[in-house]
Length: 157
Figure (cartoon, rainbow, N blue to C red):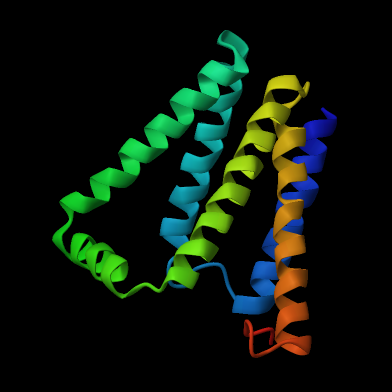
């Protein structure tokens, strides 16, 4: 019951912030965002179920394999295929290094999330706690924008 109350508080806060920023709920892209959130929620429940039926490392290997295969399907769409190939040709070595560092951090982040789902008593608790990452990302973006704008700049208005 406490999980549902916590969910309600988080949802109410998100709705209040959305209304304040957009002056309404039906903004451009709302439908697609809603569909994405529903799919993400269902996927998290499947992850929790899968982790209860197999070992963490077996699940994590299959999860990464599936993600890699899904990513390759983007090459089916001609415009995306051209953009990716163009990106490979025009990227600098420094960009590849940054992308690799980002992928390593993402790998460990995903491993942490999946491991917490494997050992936590509640999928809702893990989901809410992982949203704290967004807060830290916003704080880091503001820090870079205000103090080191030549490295990264975000619209913090």
